Structure formats: C-alpha cells, structure tokens
Length: 127
Image (cartoon, rainbow, N blue to C red):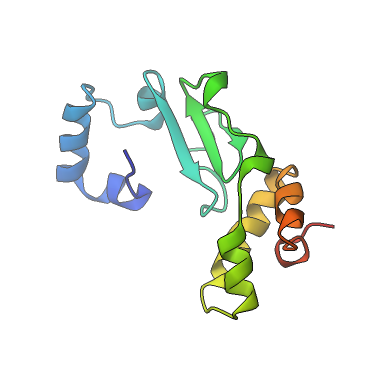
C-alpha cells in the first residue's frame, strides 16, 4: 500500500479507512511497523518520525518494521536505463530525479555501480 506521507497525517478519513483495512487503530509508524514493513522514499530529505522509528537504508528507500532478508534487492540490480535515455535527450524531469538519486547514492554507496553501468555516475554524484 502506498500512501503519501502528507496525506496520511492531513486526511483523517483516509487514514482511518486504511487503519481499519490494516486492522489496527494506532496511526504511528512505530505501531504500523510492528506488523509489516514500512518504507519511506528517498524523496524525503530524511525518514519521517526519525526519532521514534529505527530506519534501515535500502536502495532508494528507508525501511522499518517486519522485513525479511528475502525482500532485499541488491543495489546493483536497479537498472536506470530510463534515466540515461532522459539525460541523453535532455528531458525536463532529469533534474529532480538526479537530486533524488544523488541523495540515495549518499546513503547507499553500492548504487554507484549500477549508475556507472549506465554511464550516469557523474550525473548522480558518484566518484
């Protein structure tokens, strides 16, 4: 289930409906992570509720909660061919995406290998 963080806190009707579907009443990330994995995008400068929840870094996301080792995807398995094509064609969306990937690379250095494969290392701050 993907829910924009700002909607989770701002839209009580949506939040209560989702809490019923998840069979819980406590809207805190800590409570949610007791029964399932919770992911936060690297689109955030830092993970939400950072002091209340222990987050683990994964490629392109922070994760907390019930996570199995089988769910982990190695950083080098992410393919960024679409970004390479967009950079080559000077698409307008490459700027914001590059900022997001630059933040992810800072947190998960293993991503550089995948970016280098597509000649995007310098675009996202890999050395």
